[in-house]
Length: 375
Length: 206
Image (cartoon, rainbow over all chains, first blue to last red; front, side):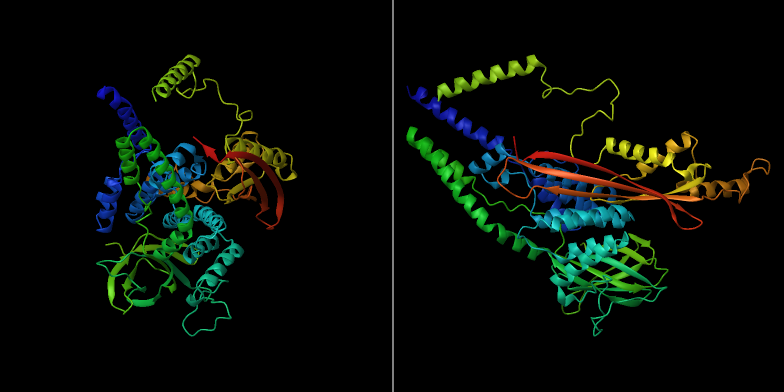
């Protein structure tokens, strides 16, 4: 008799376990390991850890992280392939999966396929544009600039950010689309007026210079545009970067965006929606536990314990993005082959000094480069 | 509970039998043996595809072939079609298609602009390493009279956020091709070709 009474409990427990497993609980151990390796400067290990990506709900996130690891390793071709793949998969996720949505109401939001906040989706295109700039593919960088502009039109209350606009504007400027470039630069001027950007040319006003006239360069001169990622080494986050060529100071960078601020503002925007969903999920879990309890008290207790133990906040985010993004747009020698970047703290102390020889491409009068203060 | 399990088991058996018996394509891959008719194939989405490449290039060719600038079989150089869309489109394929048709129909000569560096490298090599009888002569390249350029733009619209089971999208492509007289700088010939496609995307899936 006792065995027969246990049969429905076993069946129910099995069903519950299958439900939990079937929602595709993904392990994030490889991702966490890769991120740790990335933060400590072991880029090759980080890349190898993510050599094979599982086909689960974290596919987009894994591609984002691996793409960044390869970007910092200057493996721009494979990094671009990863990010284009992430864009494609993210687009397919616009179709809401009924099964995944149902599972998230019983388990937690980590069962849903990761799509990222709007700023993370935008930064896929931002970094694709950077990759194309690093490979001298100006036309493709222009394509990504238009994608960035499209993303920025669909923010729907999520935070805007100056760096994305600046990069889009610069890529369009390189493609000869000056009017749309100026539109992006105007957005930058609106978002960070203290930075002092000339919206007509995309250059920065020198200190104490009048801001009612465009910043023009002499006809034979060249300029260097270097996009800088501030990550922080040994716990010190750079405040600015000074750029030198042939031992001479060319100028300093302007910080346009803090990823931390974007993340915080995005979380706040989602907070109400997430709170409402959590309340609904508690109700569903409570109802399931009650239904089981009505058949058998022990089963109800087990069900309730299991379901509420699975309750967890979805903290997934693109962690290999830098802390801050800056740009240095400065006059430079016309025969520039390399330059030095000195990352400085708020007090002016030198945090790190890097010599940049690549990527360094020239289009007409502009040298384009990228740099990150990676450990 | 046992009734639910029995019903579930029965449904699973029936569904499996139907699926296997019907040769349902969900469960096996298939390959078409006959050549794909690019004109007849239905597009899978609103994105730029091979049918667009064919139709746009053919439309441009049909007009260009009957234009007066090709009467004397001139020499042209292709300087590229600018991609002003938000898709990574190989616009060189459009000009390659146009160029191939014109050359094969004997309507124009084309300078091999993209191979200039390789050409000069080979000529330099021959000058140093090859016998005078077999060397190609330097400074005998022909100059182009006309330059072929263009641009491809895209405008897309989507239905705004609303309560609906699907979302509609419309995408418009416009290809502009121009032939410029390298002597006068004037546009000697130009044309525009368009393509519009609409699609309905579901917002719910399995």
